[in-house]
View (cartoon, rainbow, N blue to C red):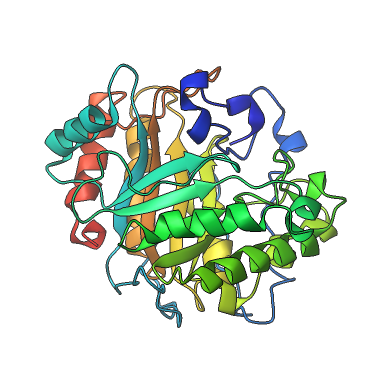
Length: 352
């Protein structure tokens, strides 16, 4: 999400989440063209991208014959045929433990991924509050300007962050510097002299320091926005890819803000990166336009995941505390949406 979607002060560690668009901006300003995959990294597949679906009228996707990723997910293994279903969960008036308990009652199962957000200078968690037994933590860690990382001033802090995640004594997903191909964050190329290579060098520096500390329980999640904003050649997401040796999972953020289908949001990304690395949908949600619109989109998304074998994880944006934004992203905003989400959670495909 963009800076205008910042969470309230009580969520400072998890604030500055990322949507592809600023509320109230016209779609043309948001660069909502399809992402381009003709500039993929050398390590990625160059196979043809699936055709796009027209928004609002697409039929359910047909089963895909796409190959499974060659990468295994590192410390958080990819399980063919299964997708871990979890969420960023923050509900008004409820503690983390109460929110998790509510979702477990409603869905009849615990979250499989617990998504949390931390600022760049925060201490990363030695443990994630109210994490269900067996759930994988996914830590989204904000970045900073590339030159401040590359000059070494934060090396000691980065090493301390690695040691804190090691202390969890379990596999942890680390999603550093997400949506770097968007124009809204200080760690994006647009805020760093239009220099995507600076992001790659910063990522590799963090990765090296974590390796030096022995953080072999950390799975690295590279997670751009679904489309490039600004929509310019220097900002293609492929330019930000650190290389297969530095990435365990590829993630992507995409929301149904302007009647986008799941295929429109995610097909090209999965075609470009899914053959080499397992895919996690790191942020996803749907705007409620009345009636069954939100429930139907959740059902369409579940169908899309069933037809996309490279997807091994989903973290829904399940909250009603997102400051200054009117949309209630929580899954139980109405009975039909909760029923659609519960049906997805009950599906064996989502039992990872």
